[in-house]
Length: 337
Ligand SMILES: [Ca+2]
Ligand SMILES: [Ca+2]
Ligand SMILES: [Ca+2]
Image (cartoon, rainbow, N blue to C red; front, side):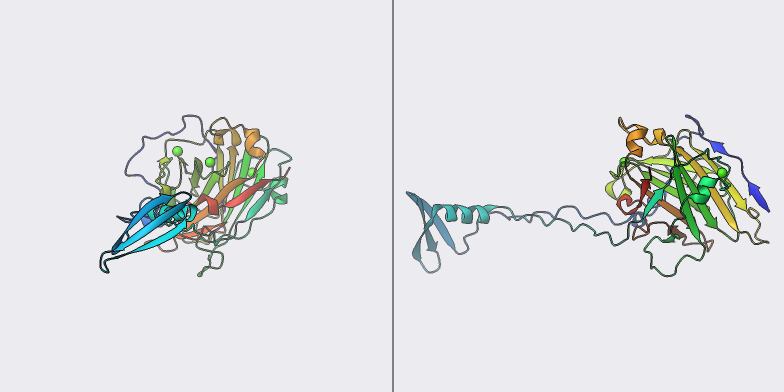
């Protein structure tokens, strides 16, 4: 049995909820899941930078262009006179007196491949009903199969297939999620609930690729949406803004099977989304500015194979750890003109 759920459209004030401190998003509930906080610059050890002549005392005096240095050895009770060029002496003194440079933390080399999706421009209207029967969807390339978030070759590999497709026009980014599922389930019905407590579909978007002010959308098979704005990743002290709603976004889910009925075997569910580019602009950005460049975009599917967890995180572009909030490790969306 196939069932299409009604399309949902978000208005400017759609379903805004009072922010609750008890709500949180994945990665925040357990900081270890948010990735390691990068070490700060090393502290300068006490005393570093001071000139320590050891057992003696150095006496400097100028003789024209030459600096003379006399070392008085307190133990051996004698003096050594050393004549060195002024420039070299100055360099020696500066080097001895300069604080030792703090070792910069090593940047984590991206050990994940960065995938690119070449999104065609839609040639006709896309009806957001969860059904991907438009000719444009048929012609859009199917993404690589989703992999474990920790790496393309990470074992065990996902036991259920997931793919996505994307299209665009001058107003919207269109997203299709194709989710294989033998038992389609969903329970959360409240907008901005923590949707990943159900099996879900997640999209992360950073149009200007600055890893700041990026957007997260989660949906379950009931079509319930959580959307939020992040000012930066949690690992950098980022905060999320849950009352923010993606204005004008249209979403729909189509279930190919029966929802919440474990007695039969389902095929899966599909998600169809239209995201207004104008609703993703920050500062003085205009939609045409955003559509003129590539975006960073991440897709994730949370699957609770065991009720007690831990949950599976299957993603388009692995980030390398169980944490989606690493925007630099998301894939790239390229708008084919
Ligand atoms: Ca459709
Ligand atoms: Ca950004
Ligand atoms: Ca929201």
